[in-house]
Image 1 (cartoon, rainbow, N blue to C red):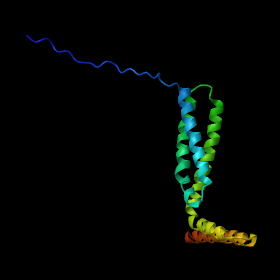
Image 2: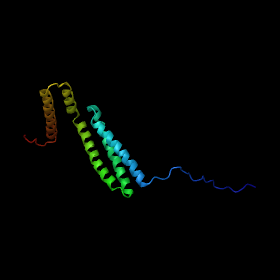
Image 3: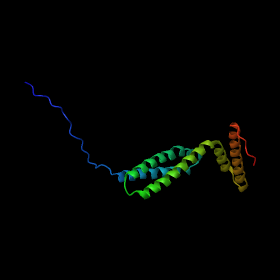
Image 4: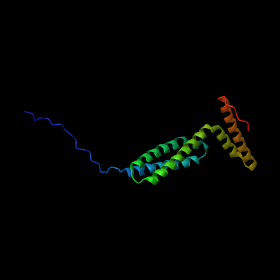
Length: 154
């Protein structure tokens, strides 16, 4: 005679780590956000080809900042952190727009940087700036004309 079969149930998994509190989760995400914003600030100060990394770093910082903000609402007493995260989100948005503008105006910016690399005198630096402003204005006018909009006379 065989003994009756029993369902084998594994013991519950035990963890040495205690579950994280909402305040700890909020702090962890806030630290990640600050680090990504620091990366975005450093990238914005790099030479032109590397500045295009801001297109990735700034939105990533923005997403992590939103997660940190949501986590801060789950924890009590995080008002100052919430205010700082909201201000940080504004800067992340600024950096994202800045990176996007660098990508859109890449040819003009690269030409401007090349011109400045060879400029020795103040007159040449001023000429580089004038050429850059004119190339951006020409680009804007061409985009407006492409969509059939009138270019305002200056």
